[in-house]
Length: 161
Image (tube, rainbow, N blue to C red):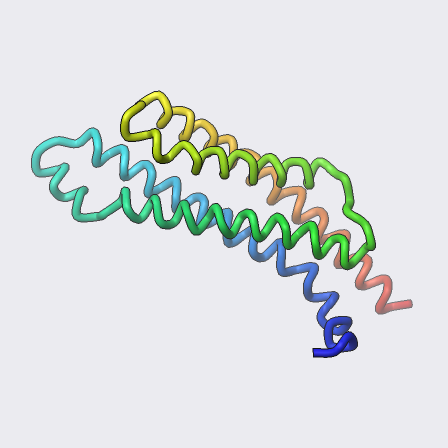
């Protein structure tokens, strides 16, 4: 692949990060659903518990959470990289800081997993961190749409001129 090919892809790179992040927001909500099912399973008794165990929610929650961690880190690095490639600088903004906070909270939450079996209070911290992630992620989605609108506006201006 030569430099002209990369230059042709440059306008589309701006949309890779936001599309990925919207998919990850949906994945985060699914992971939340699985986590709630894990809690329901843990608190259930008798036949209800036997039925919930069949859903393998704990395993699925852990697996999807691990995938989410990897993708959120790659998505954040990708967003920063594309911004740099397109503008020649890293734009210092609340969107950037919130994204870095999300990466920090997700990685901290994942680091707590080995301790959750023996210390129930660690589970509460895990849940609290992830609720913070969802709150920040929702805000990121809104500010991200504003950034995409700005990029599209610039693309329209450049193509018209």
